[in-house]
Image (cartoon, rainbow, N blue to C red; front, side):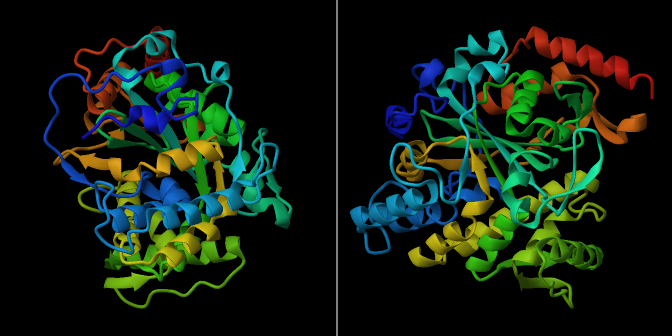
Length: 434
């Protein structure tokens, strides 16, 4: 594949491969054999909601290499509609306010990227993005742990900014020389340093929004993340309904929990929920799929609890991808338009358009039999941590971070930062009390 890193970076000047990272370095060492599939740039629930309405059509209309292999092949017409759609979402003009998508510019110095990571030559060839999904309801927990009610007209967008725990936490790492994307799910109950204390990592978003959540990932995982995307369950429901539903396999245990969660989601969204009446392979609507994603008390493929829930989220992603590839441009743009108010990101309009314009260069790569969850199974334990509740505790944070850098960046014998060493020691000390 040709090197498109300079084109992707454009005038972003942030961590889209330019900015402090400078040029690209590419992947070092040999590349493991994996299963590649060209899909939309973003993955899992969060990123699907942001770009599903435009990116899949690009892949479908212009094939995997930028040539017209389907659709009308009118590149200019497509990107004209694309630019207009994104322009409407962000607002047009240099000083205009966004009409749908909520945007913020993160300040690098507040994200606490370890100095050792800034000097890492291998990572300079990658763009790393944090992906968050929040389960917004009319009730929120403030910084004192008290339950408060949010005004009805501010529930959705204010909840994206702060006050809710992030049910989905992912890192999308893009190799800017090859276009390969690798994904890692960070389990929401993982016991980490969240900035002001050690707790479940999903609490970082509730306390300090995206800035604190990104800082949590950088300081515990030795990452250099400067950009993020956050969406709510509303966006998942809107995308799936705009696509006409998706196909899922539902077993007996899942059916009961799905319908129970569906009732709860219906109350949150102030709309009725239609229960599923049977098991097996079937088409489900947005609320039903969102409820399926929340199931954590039924096993799946040998996994249980939050590990199984993460697997279900991936199953929904694949179902969205399959359905989106069957849809026409208008349906996909409708899907994008339906979720604008449920998106919060640090990407600016020009950055987003630049990324989308090279979507056919990207592909998700999955290594056969790989476990892309953090912390890894052999280096974690589920433990009751007293007032913190049941947590996924890294038995050795350093070892997990070394695995992460090997998986994402193919770094052998990675040396973790002093920050990670300090956090690893603290986690061992804290967890030894329970």
